Image 1 (tube, rainbow, N blue to C red):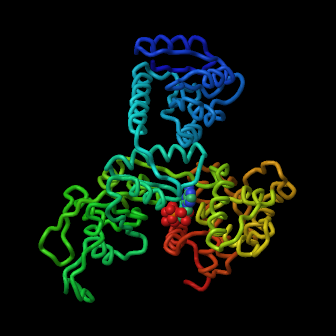
Image 2: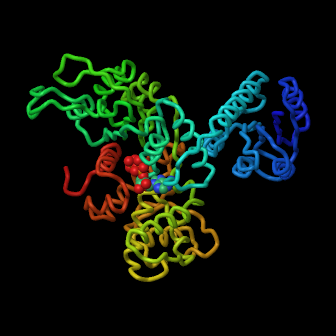
Image 3: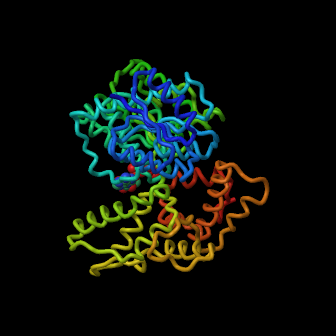
Length: 481
Ligand SMILES: Nc1ncnc2c1ncn2[C@@H]1O[C@H](COP(=O)(O)OP(=O)(O)OP(=O)(O)O)[C@@H](O)[C@H]1O
């Protein structure tokens, strides 16, 4: 029997919900404190939790991971008296099904409940007999586990998938894993890096060309869309696709046919599309730099990968996974870790995410040579200095053994104090992020003495991403006009 649990300290509200749920022919129970709710979740199978935010013994959002990890893994709908955009964002990132503000109408609550239950039923059917191979993806944090659920749905369907997330968060890794677990795994996984191709090259790279179609086209060439026939086409950095190509590509998605450059014939390709970007495509649609119709086409299943700083609980697992891999590669016995090693890693901001983490760990591994343990002293200087400066700025001593506060990545050559960002009007989260990015980039360039290879190494950014950011934030590179 489907069971709903309401965790809310208002008895009247609980009664209203119990009556609504029983009219829907489901069982309903209430708990007036978080403690009571969590106890019920431990001992009873619950399908959906309606969770209030402000409760007498704490904040509902703080216990969200525990609620979602309860033995019956319930779906969660937040029902709060105090609507707060940041709270809603956090809740949704934490994997809640919906975020409703009281007084929510009966119709809306019923709709949300039904949708959550339908999703749960579909998930249970889909999760049945098929097993997924996700052994290369490390993560137990609730944020990334919600992404695993979506990955499983994507692998079992043929729907278009859009994967978003900062650089190095694993977008390509997820895309490959979806392909490898899909019915198309016997065919190719074809990668197109939209950021590294010029407009003219992109069209011929995607659609191929006829011999003589343009200077340098010495022979016929099949494009990547054709090569992906039967398999998966992965459009990396789709936000960097020029508008003219977006138009042609939209047609390809609708018709599954295209015309190679300089050819008059239509060619057919049956591919499944997965696209990825670190950009905010909805913002781009507002600015008319990305086509809305294309965005709708890309968006059947959307997966947002959390940045590493939002899931530092996975840091240790990721490091151990990578160090094991390095030990195998270098044919060395396994290494241990000093506590200070993880303290420093946890306190760093990881702008380059997992890619940067693996880079840093590999450098530490190499520096440690034949030693049996990895200590903080083996970590690259820029990481240690950034962490030391950040903790000094906070008036703290060197990180101690107990879970240190995560601090933002900062750089040694005196970047401006982030409090300058609050000197004018208090910024929105988005404005703050944009301004902080600019500060980061300027400090990064100073730190690397403007040397591109150093910039890539420190930041974990690719050249194209770095140049795109420099352009966006109107930053002058040393030696450039
Ligand atoms: N959860 C994870 N578990 C294990 N490895 C990971 C995970 N996430 C990322 N990685 C590793 O981090 C590196 C970067 O991942 P990937 O290239 O997929 O990121 P990305 O988001 O596509 O980056 P970009 O936007 O810069 O192209 C790869 O070596 C990948 O295997």
